[in-house]
Image (cartoon, rainbow, N blue to C red; front, top):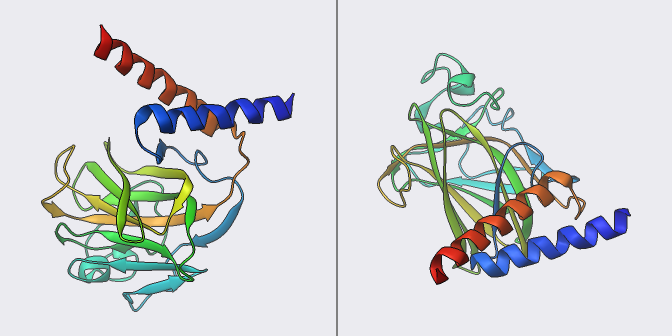
Length: 218
């Protein structure tokens, strides 16, 4: 039965990628993208606010005005509490700001990432995130998401990507403008193919794709 469920889930993920016209599947919620963690970063040791920063085999770069935008350890110079950014944030984090500013996540060895999730926050009161994935300099996927505060963003791509860039804008559905992204608790790994949460996300994606097709040909 478990083997059958895994095969059905893998088929669902494949169909979502084909029907949606994109290889990258976006999920929101802890544990929806990464099962077995192979790399993790928490930034607690980055007290000097280094940029670039390497932790547990992951390479981070902030493109804006510098790591943490001049904030002190745990951002206490800019926020009353870390939870002002996101309930999922803990201790120190990485943040930046500026026109089209983003935080980049790569593998330090240059290898591809297939599954990643992280706590996404914003310097704005509400979170309006935008992400883009790249392989060899070519964009392979992108998407928007919104939340009253923070969110756990998960990205899954069977083809892999070598970079993900995360932005946070003042309003929803933005791809450019002044951006103030912040992230924490980054996890990269290879989860079980038949993860119930991931399978549910895939089936939801299939349903949405079918609805779009019906409207197109109605």
